[in-house]
Length: 226
Image 1 (cartoon, rainbow, N blue to C red):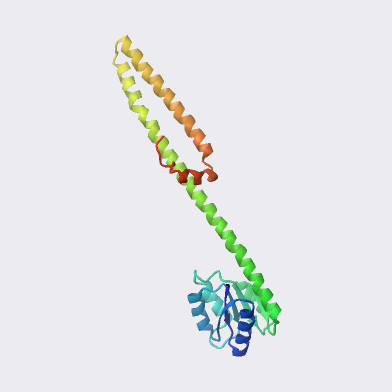
Image 2 (image 1 turned 135 degrees about the vertical axis):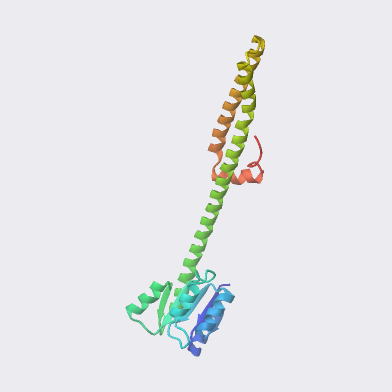
């Protein structure tokens, strides 16, 4: 059930709006105080706010500014109500970040259509944010996997170096011919091993797509040594 906060200083109109919304299945919080409305928004996390502009304690613009300054309420859709119908007033509300503007008097249908349109737009926005968050997680996993691959590759490439270094030193020491062949064979074997590792790294890099990262994580393969 969607929760809607109504902030309207005219008590009769505030109650009337709440009755219309409740009849449509909305959970409604209502108040005639702008300051109280700000507190309700922060405490109750409504899905949408319907707010009058001209109120005795604070204006609707003040309410909108206060809520947009709070990260927890900044994204709540906001519909202004006002008897002021000139273009500059509407533009001011929109420039501040309001999602819609209803001029008094308005019909129940106009109110419901405005709310339905804002909630639908908000739902699309939330879905888009969720998709972007998942894409970000996939990217982070891909970066982590490539870093693990690079670390493992570095370790594997270091291991043959001690054998290569030892073989070179023994060859430089004028070892007997039979031993020279032995050390040459070591160099050849380690060379082939290095080539194999590099080929494996190239293939793994090609396979490290975002789609494969989830599978690799499931089987805990990313941190395993080759």
